[in-house]
Image (cartoon, rainbow, N blue to C red; front, side, top):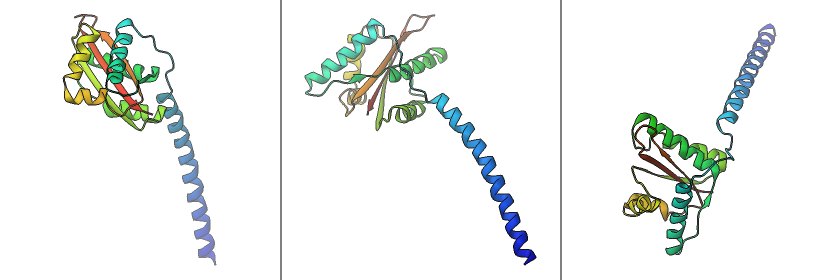
Length: 169
């Protein structure tokens, strides 16, 4: 009897301790996650970004596809990647998984794709280059419903960096 009572008391202490610790950790994790996944609603588009998005939508229409709706949060994530590429003097898709997971979590996207480019001077030239690349064209004509874009110039060289993210929501 004493052994059973001792086991019950020990089990109660373990359960209480585990619930107490896990509750604190999940509250901290939840608070951290909400800070990392807040939806960005404000984004200021420049003329080049708007023109590039219009060209992409015009091409989609010419192919019998629906236009893509712009989402500021996606453009903000695109701008973050432009900043990364400028700071690191690279053109790549590094951390694409993190960007896409953020868009999936925050916006409820089902699929996400990305085009990047560097050193094009006009919306027409970058869209033409993307359309001449099978992988980039696949994103432009892909089964997506929304998109965002950021075009930023390196303050030192003046060369432009492009990140265009597509999402199906």
